[in-house]
View 1 (cartoon, helix red, strand yellow):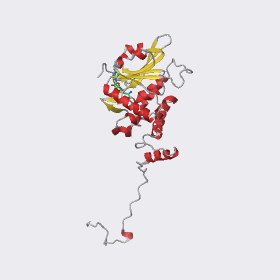
View 2 (cartoon, rainbow, N blue to C red):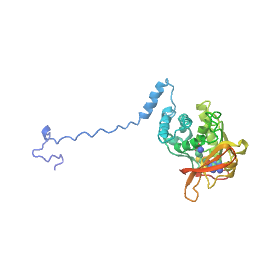
View 3 (cartoon, rainbow, N blue to C red):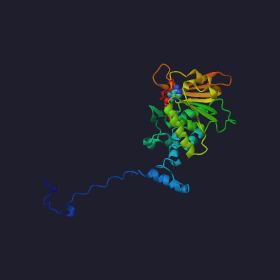
Length: 286
Ligand code: SAH
């Protein structure tokens, strides 16, 4: 075959049309890649909202958060207050600039110092468990089912800010000073962007000791897992209160989510709900 490549007899250029091999069929239509779709949706939403300028790359938009909420709902999260809190809280304000594009994925993300912000679906499941505490007084605690809430492991402050929407007060303890300070900055930024967002009391200390000054708590949630539940947490759990924390799998590998209820008569009842993976609970401060 010559360089010009026509094996047919008499194949000289220019070829007559009937000598040309049939043209390849057009490929089946593919789904178009639309990298701008996300921003266009945000822009449409902006116009509907009357033209207020969204900041950043559209992550400030309720649109991206609603998509995350719809995925959480499809995966079984049904508590309306928890879903509403996820829809309101801008997660991208709490993650590193380099990771903002993943802020609304259902994934845990690094927040520095070897720690991670938990997956929204895991946060949602734990908070929904807290909201369903047996001591909830439906009339009195309306809109604030978490009552007085203690969080162990502030991290970047995302979960604490979510809890704040459903609690009368949130106290959150962090043992790493740099994260404690970063959480303060993040929550201040949030409160500047979203005036009226309830504040959180951030404590730099060893959360294994709980936080006695504000005890007892109606709800206690830990974002780090140890081999056992510290006695201080059980002591600081109010009657009618519920604690949710990852703990080492009894006699096995990995962690499970442990739920402890304190009944009105003071009795404690412990149940276990599913395997989880959290960073380790460590004692002392750094
Ligand atoms: N709720 C956090 C998740 C942080 S990861 C968020 O939304 O970002 C868990 C955190 O628990 C880490 O920051 C880790 O430093 C902290 N931690 C581990 N042991 C602790 C302890 N004994 N007291 C307080 N914080 C602790």
